[in-house]
Amino acid sequence: SLKLAMNEAASLIRFNNLIIATIAILETVYLSQIALSFQIIVLIIVILSFMASGYITNDLLDYETDLINEKKRPLIIKSITRNKAKRINLCMIFCGVLFSLFLNLQAQIVLYMILLPLLYLYNYYFKSLFIIGNLIISFLIGMIFIFSELVILQSYYLMIIPATLAFFLTLIREIIKDLEDLKGDSFKKMYTLPIVF
Image (cartoon, rainbow, N blue to C red; front, side, top):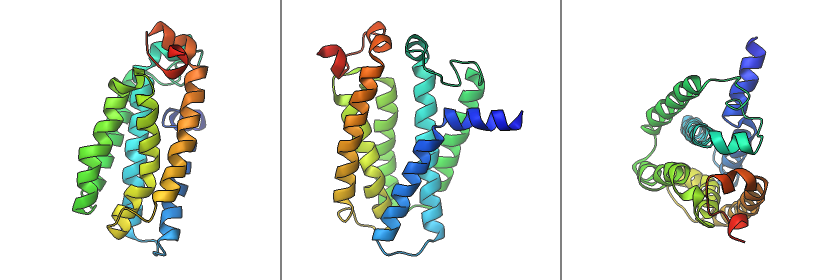
């Protein structure tokens, strides 16, 4: 049914995490004392599109470990096929790239020179390295505040405190997730913090 398909798609793109990211962006807007505008809508679409793509890429690459760890991901329970997930991923990337053209030049440079390379390098390489993967994800989550400020105000220092808080809270969360994924990560010969210790 349509409702089931929507639920599975929401699970694939981690809809709850996207809602939290949207709240972080709106918090930045509120603290910046800026009215809601087209630019902010564009910002939300860009961040959510690339975040969704990162989650889908992660699920595609982590299929074996998620299977071992008995995760209830859509790809594991076969509610979404790998080909369909790849098509959704391409749509998310296209959407993110298209709407990023409306961002200011500074934001585009940060997006394409720092954030996206880190996001995809994390998925393909860094997540298996001792603490580095955790630090990169924590940095990317914290950067939601900084990047939002860069788009809204063309500055990058007002949101340092919420970005730092998000960084450390995410770091704790990522280490806990690595503990939960110990079995599958060990099978893949990864060097996460719980495995090393």
